[in-house]
Length: 205
Image (tube, rainbow, N blue to C red; front, side, top):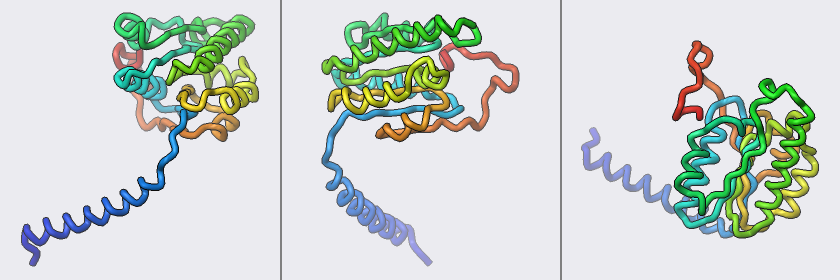
């Protein structure tokens, strides 16, 4: 019968082996680069995660920028917070006027999305911006407001080496997923909207 001391000793030995294996693995990870990141999928958290990384970068003294596509008409908490408290650390631009079923004007939506993309390229080219969040750009790409080939080519060929770019929104196109370094798909398991509960302040906006 094992004693507490035996269990503790086995645990220590197991952790030593895991640490040794982890150290060997980490020794091979030496490259640094700015990442192309995609947050997609039907679940909640795509934009929230992107804005979380904005705050993380600010805490490390890394200048950041946001271009918000599609849902720009919303008075979101993250926009208010960044513009009020971190205006010098995060440039914030809005190119959308609301979801497409609200605007009901495809030509206007296309013009807004393209203006947002031009601003995004300007911000990404500026190497002082270490992290650029393109919030909900995947919706603009899905609706063909922007040319996916142009976006992918720009990210692969013109993005500065150490600049991180995060693109959020459902239904990311396969070309973007293929080009990205990091892709996270948010899976919907349960959402209160299905039970008749509207979007909650502080949770969804």
